[in-house]
Length: 102
Image (cartoon, rainbow, N blue to C red; front, side, top):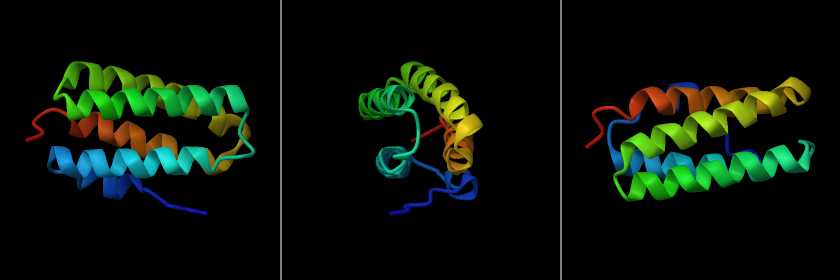
């Protein structure tokens, strides 16, 4: 299963609803990284879920914090599993899209 959230798609996010929809897809994509170390995959997924909750609560500072933390876990996964690189890049792009969300 490949959901395939791209950096370009993340860069096109213009409102909170789009961001929340992409976060849900990113969570599915992380879950699909079965070859990733289980602990890192679980940590990245947990941070993306927390980011989703923060986004729903319109707590943008926490949203950025949780996305950044998830990005760190995903970059560690990507060191061993190249398939995670695109997920990490999409999360990094979302971090930049948070300021000014409507």
